[in-house]
Length: 94
Image (cartoon, rainbow, N blue to C red; front, side):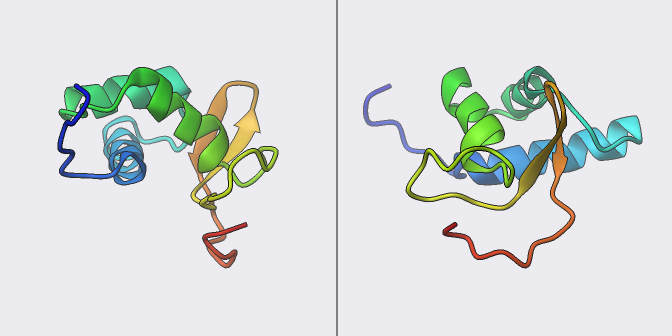
């Protein structure tokens, strides 16, 4: 899909997937695999590797700064478990 048109950004799809999982399961921590499955079930066309990279790195406040643009949306709370960050005071470009 070299020139695919995406209606939503990967970031938006991940945040929507977290919200749906939280409502359905009544908890706030999820593995990347659960979030990827939910995003896919909701129609995401982003590659699994792209979604995973966003979850564990680009959107994770406590991940090493490996990306020029980072978003303080998620936090790693345990090995392989992430939740939506509780503090959104940080700037979008960390």
